[in-house]
Length: 215
Ligand code: 3PG
Image (tube, rainbow, N blue to C red):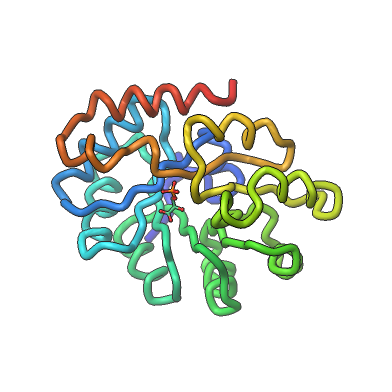
């Protein structure tokens, strides 16, 4: 699928569109569009739909089709098959909790924006060698959090991170204040209860607060 001219074809440029990437695990396809609209209205344009539910690809397709302000991507992409499925339904980027050689090569070959996950310095070095400069740090809180990011800043100069996993409204500002943090990912802006209740106004408010986290 062709990448729309209005959407950056580069992961760093996509990540620069908002300080927070909502990580969305959608159970009901009918929730996808109103949820995405609320987040975009609040100011969060970059949305990650995890491929962890049977409805994920249909949800992603609906958002790609019906929410033009959203830059929607697929999360929890574990292999090339999922990558191709996500591209086919309109994903503009892919996120993975870790990375494999196969995934790195496939995204490079397709010149498809990709945010691969790392948890260690060696993994980050390996992906840097392959040309990836923006990495997901996952699971951020469990893997060392802010302390890890501060500690690797000098050694891994030139790399930036999107910490995800356990990040929330209280901890996000301290992450975003670090020079090697480009943005953060998290599910807190779309609480399960609010989605189930169709409480889109609550989600828009949470998104608006998150969008202001980095001035
Ligand atoms: C996930 O795996 O769902 C993401 O890392 C989001 O994690 P969070 O729910 O802790 O924000």
